[in-house]
Length: 492
Image 1 (spheres, rainbow, N blue to C red):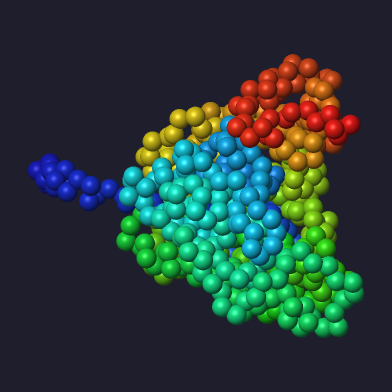
Image 2 (cartoon, one colour):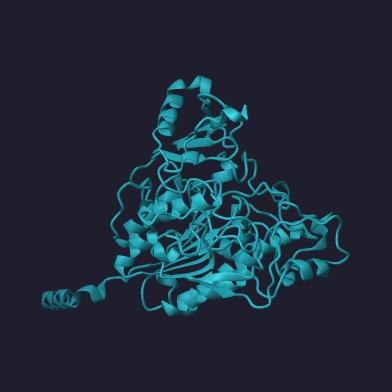
C-alpha cells in the first residue's frame, strides 16, 4: 500500500501542472440603468427575468452591492480600474462631441497610464474581450478598449450613439461595422400626437439590425474562438437604457393593458407602449443572457466559468421610464444621478460552480472597485497598487468574513451642484450641492434602521460625521478642474 502511495505521489510530481485545475474563465455581465428591484430574484413582480433568476438560484445574490457611480462612464471606469471616483481619472460623463451624425464619437478617454482588469489578466494567458457599450474613449483615443488591454471589442464606443438601438454602425476593434440599410435618425425626438398604429412607430424608429442582437452574436463568437484558453469577457449590454426600442415580437410578449397612454418622446424617442417596451427590453436582455450561458454549457465551459452580473447604476429618472410602476428601486431614495441608495445600490449575482454556495445570499457591503482585487485573488494575478477595492473572494467561497471587512466606500458626482457619499459600516454620509454653498453639511443615515435614508441624524452623531467628512476630504484632486468641487458663485 505504502509503495503504491509513494508511486502515485512520484507520478503526480512528474506531471506537475497537468494535475492543476485550469484557470477559471470569467464573464462579467453589465446591464445599463437596471434598478435594484428589476429582477425577479430581487422582488420584481411584472418584468420576467427567468434566466437571471436561475443564475441567482445557482449562485450567490448580494443585497448590499454598489455601482461605481450614479452614471455610466465613471461607473465603468471604477469597475475596470479598481479605483473609486475620488481616486480614478473618470469621475463623470464628459462628452468629446455633440449629437449630430457627423460629430466626433466618444467620452473623455481613460488614460493609457490607467491599469485595467484586462491588462491584469493578460500576462496570465487570458484572452480578453469587451462586447457592448464602452463609454471610456472614442476611435483612435488612448481610452479605446484595444488600448486598455482588450484583445477584441465589438459594440458602441460612444454613449451618445448608444441612445439609439438601430445605429448606422457599431465598432469592431478599430473599424466601423456598417449596418447596411440603416439610415441615421436622432435618438431624441418628440411627436405632437400619437401615430395611428404601432407599425408607424416601428417604420420610423427602428431598422433591420437591433444592436443587442449583433452584440450577442459577437459575444458567442468570442466564446467559440476562445474555448481552449482562459478568457475574460465583459458583456456590457446597453439595456435597458433609453431609448425605448425593442423588436415587436418581444413587445408582444407583454399585454396592451400595461399602458394607458403612449410616450410622446422629447428627452428620448417616443413609444406607443412605454411600460410594455421597457419590460420587453429587460426580458429580451434576460433571454440573451440565457443564450450566452447555454453556449457555455454546449462548449463544456460552464463548470470552469465564473459568471457575474450587475448594473452600472439605478433606474433612470428620464421620462419614458416609470420607476414607480415597476417599483424599480422599492422604497429607496433617489434614482440614477443620485448618490442616495436608489442611484447606486444595484443587483449583483455571482455563479462560481462548485465554489460559491448555490442559492445563497450575502449582505457583504461591496462595490465595483472590489471586482479587480477579487479577480486577482481568484486567479493569482498581482494586485495593482493604489486601488481602492478589497477582495470579496472569501465571501464568494462562503466564508463568514474576508479581508478588510468594513472598508469605507466613497462616491462623488458632479452634476446637480456636486455631491459626495460615504458608506462606512451601517453609516451613510451624503453632501449635496457642494458648489452652491460654503462647507455643505454632511447628512447622516443609519442604514440598518433607516435603509431608505429618510431621517438625517447628523446632529446626534458628530463624531461619525467628522469621520465621514474626513474621508470625503481625503479624495485625490482631479486633473479635470471641473471635478474639484470649486464653488460656483454664478449659481447664486
